[in-house]
Length: 555
View 1 (cartoon, one colour):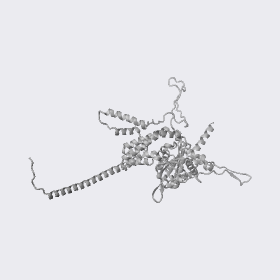
View 2: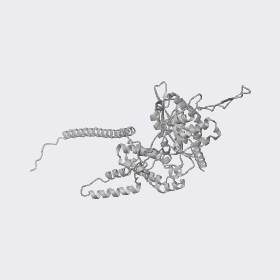
View 3: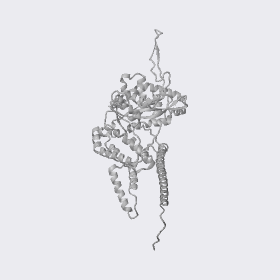
View 4: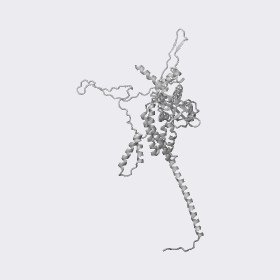
């Protein structure tokens, strides 16, 4: 049945209803826009909170690792492969478990073939004979009665059992007396003849060169603070105040300062150098706290490719972190300088610089470290994949270490360059997917912004993939800073730099620092080695002369 509405049509009422409906729609649209705006703001706040949380987690992870964690950044590539396989190939059911497992193993094999896998070496253990160069002291434990316990007849020796053990004779301090006999003439009683007094390393002091070398080695090679040395001497019945020891170290550095300057000039004479810097606290009287200074380190080591530069490191103390310090040190140098991203070196690329601009080669270890920090904090699969790709570069470097520069360059162009070109494309693609404020995006931007310097090693077999050569020489400074705490004055910082330069260069050349310093001080103080022959006292020259002398004596 159809119901018809025969009521007259009220046009005005209809218009009024249309206007009211339009108002309702407009109100709903306004409310919708407001809600959309609130939603967008909430999403933005959430994303910002997530990014800030990720940033704080990264900072917290770095602090926790710096305080409680290990310093090593080594990773197990198999563990990274396992992490990636778990993310990329999740289990889809119990029925397909075996298939998934075999697929994961095949994928891991492919990844290992592409990126390499490190085999953990067996731990070293001190087994077998003790060092043959150590003197032997025999202790014979014999039987009291040499008659046969059965028949009473005499026993004869049929063999012996030997057991070697480490022994030690405690360090012995002694007094060195300088005796100069005086002679007179019975005829002319006024004539008195006596040998001239030798030069002393400390004017009016009571320490000889060997004792000064011992204190310097204990402090700067084994990082024993002077107050502990004071306690060790007191245990031997020797009363020496730490301030006296500090004055003696300053005097020792004064004698060795020309040799330190020659060491720096020798390093700067080579066309390829490493450089790094580290903060050093120094007492700041009147402020009640320390002032942050720094050590600038200049290092060379051509052993990885058989070049002419011997292994050495020179530290230079600077009272601030301004770029003028690096400018003064590298004045006249125009070769290749391998550094991290420290902005203090930027003044060296000025085209108007005397001698021309320096060519920078950057450090892949620093770029890797930023990605590694993100991996430790967030377990990001992108970070894990980046670490695996960088590990492939280092695997090639390990394989070609020790070969000539030409062979290294050929291997890098053939094997490393395709991997690095693909790595750049991959980084750019990942950067487009990540939030600009994330820690991983910052790490990738750092890598891409330094790309030219990071990849300079591909075309030059003399350049290393990283600056670990100089990074390793900073570890003794860090240990000393942890134990000594601070330098007492600018002169104390300079003393620290001079002694550490010579001692750590000795270590790089496998020289006993105490033996070296004792001999060098004796030759410098006595005047046996003149200033024009100071190059003979550079550690590697000193070692070569000592070895030649030993061979001559043996012949």
